[in-house]
Image (cartoon, rainbow over all chains, first blue to last red; front, top):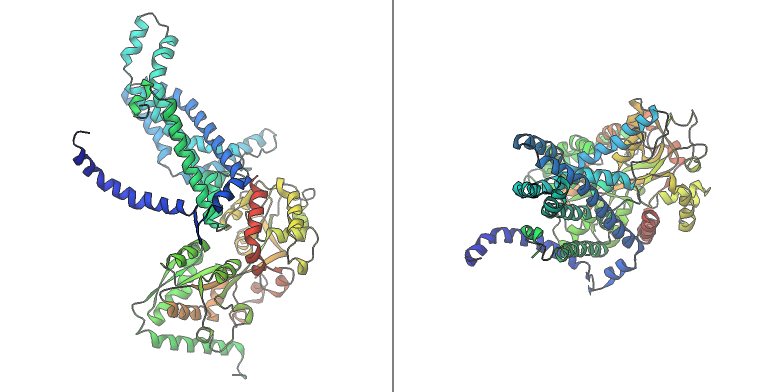
Amino acid sequence: MKNRPTTLLLLLPAALLVGLLFVLPILGVLSLSVYGDSGFTLGPIRELVGSRVSLVVLERTFWQALTVSVICVVLGYPAAFFMSGLSTKLRAYLVYLILLPFWISILVRTYTWIIILGREGIINRTLAAFGFSPVQILYTDLAVRIAMVQILLPIVVLTCLASMLDIDKGLVKTARSLGATPTQAFVKVFLPLSLSGAATGGIICFILCLGFYVTPALLGGRRSILISNLIDIQVHQSLNWGFAAALATALLIITLACLALFRLLTRGRTEFSSLGVGR
Amino acid sequence: MVNLTRRTFNVGASSLVLAGLGARSAAAQDVTIVVNGSGGSLAEVIKKLFEDPFTKATGIKVRATAPVSLPKLKAMVESGNVEWDLTELNGDDVARASEAGWLEPIDYALIDPNNVLPEMAKLRDAVVRASYSTVFGYRTDRFGGKAPKSWADFWDVKNFPGPRSLENSPKGNLEFALLAAGVPLDKIYPIDVDKAFAKLDELKDHIPVWWENGAQHVQLLVDGEVNMTSCWNGRISPLKKEGKPVDISWNGGALMLSYLGIPKGAKHPTEAQLFLKYRMDPKASAEFVKIIPYPGFVPGMMELLEPEFVATLPTAPQNAAVQFRFDSGWWAQNLDKVQKRWNDWLLI
């Protein structure tokens, strides 16, 4: 912060790029929710508040994001913990394995789930071989959730792992030498120190979930669509861009509110200070 | 002219067209028109049969873009930054675009100087490009040798069990529901929306997935994800030829038209109309239909095709007789309201 003018100058190219190509167009889109053909209007916002379908979809988006993030953290944290105890070489191989699906396009990974979950897919064929009748997994909320977890899990694992590797292993050893059982050392020393990584992973996961589009569109049924899909319907089918903009505004506000809430919850907690969000 | 057969007349007319276009080539050398279409394999065929020969004859280059999108047309016209010179449009899109003033009027004196296009093919600001049908397709191996014959059978989950799919749009589906409820073909319009939704209620829980595009309904049927689905006629015949256990029924199908129109404020409207005129060539159109079975109304085209093949087209008399003409006008007027109700009905 000492070299303020120089710092600002360094920021300028990125800020200009983001400002011109991202912030300005977004403001343009958002303004559609309050500006119609005849100037200022509250019509789209009133439509949003009065529309049951958008409230239902907003609520569903929120729950879907929450459950997916919780599942990701519950699955990702132990995996990261396991990896943090390995040798550097072995860990590098595992990180590579985790990144491998991450480099494959979301679209391809989503399509793969159709092959696995479909009525003539791997799961149902196996069930049929044992004499069971096919179960409808594809085109349900469950299918969307499974695929979202698979897509987002690498992010959570890697975020958890990064924070765990930052922890001074000497602290755990010290706790043990002072008489703590392995469980105590984990719960009282390691867990609190690694929580920031888990929370960051969970929050990133949650925010990414809020904007998911392809996965619910391809794997979900009519009751699985999320807010992005509803915006798409308003843009492409109903041509109701004001309403679409109002929905987009709502999505943005909810996302920002989630970030603010996270900040509030973690205020003053030292374990989050490394993120710069807890202060 | 009267003594000529239609066929020789058309061949003669199209060579006149070519000669006329050729004369313009010197002036139009540096012009590139942007023609927006559906993309994919369709675009390749159009390029080979229409665009490349057109460029050769006139010097006007053609750049093809995709996909067809009414929102994009709206954005272009409203922002004044019109990239397309010509675009494909579905029937109800034409009605909405025309009403909103997003299209240039067509100069029929230029594109149809001998007045041979049937009236059905001509709108003030769009020309029919193709006709296709939304019919129902089914797996022939799922109903113990029985074949569903009507939309009533499509709704009959007892005799024809298993999951189905329909398009995620009220367009067409309300009509199919009315047919399933016993409304005769000529009494569909104006649509009794309440009655249609009540009938759709019966089938709602048997439809795990509502398709969004043509590729998807093909996949659903071929993968065995559903036993029956509404579909576009042209997508299923190639599968049937490949020996896949699928078939369609024309009964109660929706005969739909797709159009070509010039966006308001297009940069090269005259050259776009010359290309439109070129698209009316019966020989090239016949070749086109052999590959993509969506015929337009180009006079003289059907006479160039085998009768057995004509029988597989949506506009063949025996097929047209059991279908209804999809009423774009009704939908343009009612879509906003019905779409809102559809979303509420489907998504909650």
